[in-house]
Amino acid sequence: MSDARAAAASVVDPELRVVTIGDLGIVRDVRAGADGRVTVTITPTYAGCPAMDVIRADIRAALAAAGHADAEVVTVLSPPWSTDHITDAGRAKLAATGIAPPEHTGTVTLALSPRCPLCGSPDTAQLSRFGSTACKALWRCRSCGEPFDQVKAY
Amino acid sequence: MSSEALELGDDALIAAQRLAEWCASAPELEEDLALANIALDQLGAARLFLSYAGEADGRTEDDLAYLRDDREFRNCLLAELPNGDFAVTMAKLLFLAAAQKLRYDALAAGPDARLAAIAAKTRKETAYHLDHAARWVVRLGDGTAESHRRMQDAVDALWPYTHELGERAAWLALVEPVLAEATLDRPADGWAPAGGRDGVHTEHLSYLLAEMQVVHRAHPGARW
Image (cartoon, rainbow over all chains, first blue to last red; front, side):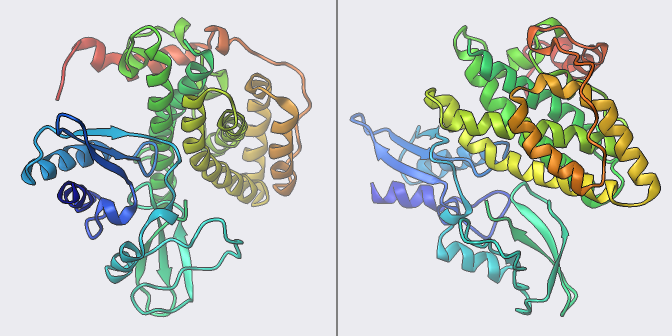
């Protein structure tokens, strides 16, 4: 089963193509039934995330390639996904590609700006509370001048 | 059928359709993205609620969205009112998101496990919508003479429709501080139109549904 688990977790997110769905923490469970058929349980990031259908199809394709034909993908809502479920490896991949990772939720919000993922400066300003996907906001670094995306704490 | 799921699903669906009308027409690019994102969140909520609402009698989310007539919709009247100017849109979003947040919070702690799971998901997004709308209401209300006048006009015009939104005291506790910070007058309570929860809507809903449903009805069963 470890190969099925690895195959599901390694599916690349269709909108944030530097991270896998394992990095994002949306794979909840991978198990085989008595008949050997694999069931993958995932949870959506945002309720209306338009990437979910592609993710389901990609999971089935990845499992088929790993020798598990006709895998079933089940979607659950509870407990709701949070950006806290993004792994440290996922956060590092986001930062390395110029997308600021989210701050942890539940911590006291002091309205701290994210550090610029390009030059590291803390002197950044939010340009838009919404970005190119449901999970991101748009920022700009006052030091190096570059705009960048941040995955919003959620 | 869960009437609660149907009401919340219809509120979110009609709000999504209205917000999407701003796509490529918002005052600035960033706000265009914001409104489209909020519409997408509302659509996501609508799909979850309507899928659940339809299970009892074997109807799908698409059956409910595209094949019902106006008298079968249970959304509040506020959601179906035209967008008006940007101030009207932000006042609508403030009022609706406040009501959605309260109902989602209650459901998330409620006895129906399915509704609780949906509400626990959607309330995080609604809180962000509420915050976004509140910021704009304050910026416009406490802005220039022109923006203040238009924001006050919007609040005054929509206020009667807020009586239909449910638990009043908790809702006022969310909305009144925003109006105060925005230097806007909290309108007096008076006329309180209702009927949305019983399927008695304004004429605006029929036009909205005509546009939203026409392709699905013209090509039944079409897939892509």
